[in-house]
Image 1 (cartoon, rainbow, N blue to C red):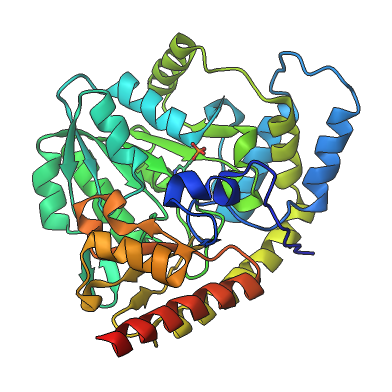
Image 2: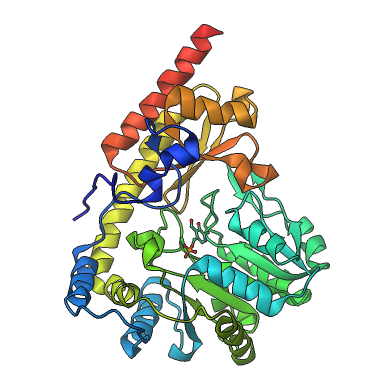
Length: 387
Ligand SMILES: Cc1ncc(COP(=O)(O)O)c(C=O)c1O
């Protein structure tokens, strides 16, 4: 059963870093991508069991860890992966950095599709590689890939950093879209790093791992984790799937180089518990809840003057087009924080393409979501009456 908790005082960024992040703490946090729901009992029990043996020394990834991932992929994504293809890792962002280091050189071009989760462009820049921005285009009510532009950028690139499903637009890429990406990747010999951290939270359509397409197995690095879905981000446990032997060996050697190859004893137990059939039932319940929350949020926000919510096909994040408000990015930030008293992520932090947008996290209780949406509506009405 889904349970929502008051997280204040647990040192969580979402509630306890409000003052540092927004300059005030009397606001409702609808920002960073983690949730207010408790983990399923299966995970809690696994962690308690592990804690009952009070030594937390260096821990190996046991065979059950790999089996759990393999079974999850077969059940959820109909992709039959080999145990050997799986490399355990800490965070997904860590693996993005490892992949950039392993498969590109200084000044190489790396394609991203903005607006995008900020560590994508930050990681490229930090390694002195070139960001090639294949900006998404808004067409037929959805953010879509500009394939002509992708083809042009691919000629100058070594790698595509794909976010599938896409944060912040909530897109679930279709088989046709993935096939088009795959054709371009093959034509221009691109390595594709596919961040699929949101792939369990599918509200519309079906997630397909691009690596499962026949012509992608020798050029794809897939990144995933139970952290978003099951709200266990601080356990720092994720994994990488690489079918091609030499790519996998190279990635592994760079993991060793950074010394980031040790496991978290609680994270390992949590992943094994997360990927069971019992937790899957909990996930189905979560998906129904999130879909209802998304529909309610889209409906309420679309009644607010100047705001258009783009219905997310995946994730618990809503991308809000606020361009019709006529506010600058700074004005938008101040409007949400100081007038509406809600803390969202500023669209501009997802790249220039996010200018005029805001991102709202709806993974909270229905009461909190209603309160936040009501505050936005009231604040906009106050603002319009004053003008
Ligand atoms: C697309 C995407 N990748 C990676 C992460 C973070 O992953 P990790 O905490 O495993 O580094 C997030 C978190 O919001 C995300 O949205």
